[in-house]
Length: 281
Image 1 (tube, rainbow, N blue to C red):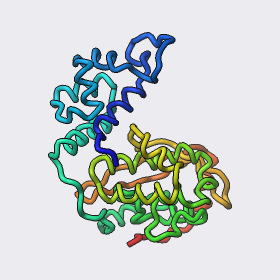
Image 2: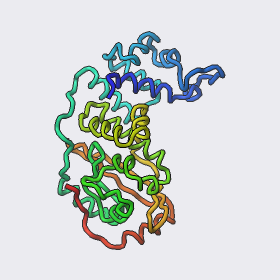
Image 3: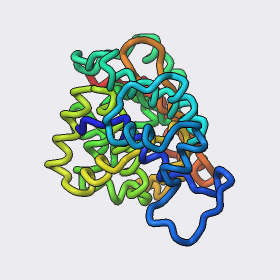
Image 4: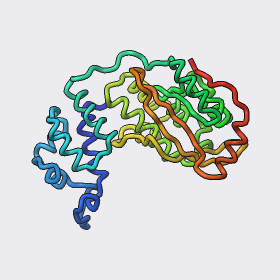
């Protein structure tokens, strides 16, 4: 990981904002994408010199008021604002790096919730994308593509290192962006286990992972639509919701639902049986 996560995040978000998004003319002589530093500084009410110091990592202690002004000027989402706040804390040493390995145990009540969600495909993951438990509906969807073959199954490791992943996900490029951004977000907040997995994938997956990981300046989507290609049932268009579970274990519940009538019919065929949810521990 780099030592200027706060500056990298601010610069990436600045370059992602179109001038037209904030009421500025796009012009035809721009050398870089997004907003110029002077434009963002004006919108946030700070000097260009100070914004430059923040982006270059020469000033790592912006006040809450400045961070709030930058977040407003960049139009950050609620999740991005929380991430920015955490980056400031990590940069200033206000929080310590997570030393404990990601929790692998899933609370009995969460397992019971998974069972109630049958036959919908649903799973619980930890902060480095290990699959900790899932419904039978998810096993029927994912197992034929090899996603659950490793122990523990890991979403990022599968997408970047298993040759079957590109066939399983027709929109692999977009999904790869999301998985890399997810891991980058955890590593940027000082998680050594996320950093270790990122280093592993940089070696085992090479540029398809490394380029995405080091260039990512956005947070992964927590809701959206994915295309899956089941080796028997064919393509399915699935909407998903990702919900943070309460507690200190930093686990998320991910639930898939059919996004169209064809996916609804296919899922109904795949999930007729109702075995209980399984934990990967």
